Length: 311
Image 1 (cartoon, rainbow, N blue to C red):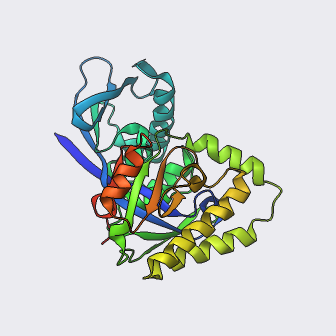
Image 2: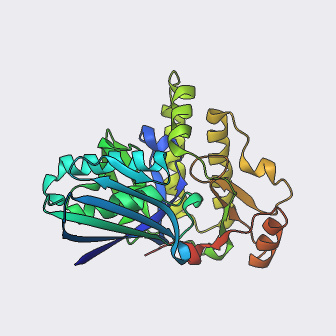
């Protein structure tokens, strides 16, 4: 008998990096996500766990297998991914020892709606689905395994955009209405190179460990609120620009608009700077935006309505 659980992908519209320090952030759950299917059968011989991860179109992108109940890696086509997954499964097993019955072997199949390298939440959707299957708290699973801010875990099961803040390690999640009247002017563009979020977080912490971040945290929190409230695309563009300048100053990285100076509109980095998605705002129409970025060899582009769950 198979159990199937699905989770939403995510985009962080405001608060990247500073969400880790308690900034109020605006996040979008996505129409694209990941499903987790768990099958079990009576173990004949030693129990094991077979894991198959499928990309869009059913294309395999990761396979591994574990011995049970030790979760030792038996075989894999990617040692690093297997080690990360092993950490998650060992943590899950410590939280819910009854999840894996020692009398059974298991087969897990995951199916992504988006390419794994896009950075839309291949890990967070998995953790959220695993937690639902095992009936444990997803934020606890995250905190004890991979770590992170947790906004992506909150997005995984949300039916609306959220305002998200960490109070210590506790999440404070507030559903919000974020469907601007100018949403047809908002686009999401993949920059072509998935960033390693954990690596970028380590760099950010190292660069800012001796800084008082109370002022930028306050400013970004204010921007997050204003983004949900404004009805004016020019005011929204100004908020995007202000946010870019704040993070640029902290990260010592140029704002993303610097690399596309002739784009007619405003641009804002999303997630880890330098390769993940960016948000584009332009009143020149979808055809212009698609043509412009195609000319930059950036062909992965979504409209707001195509990608965002907006409640």
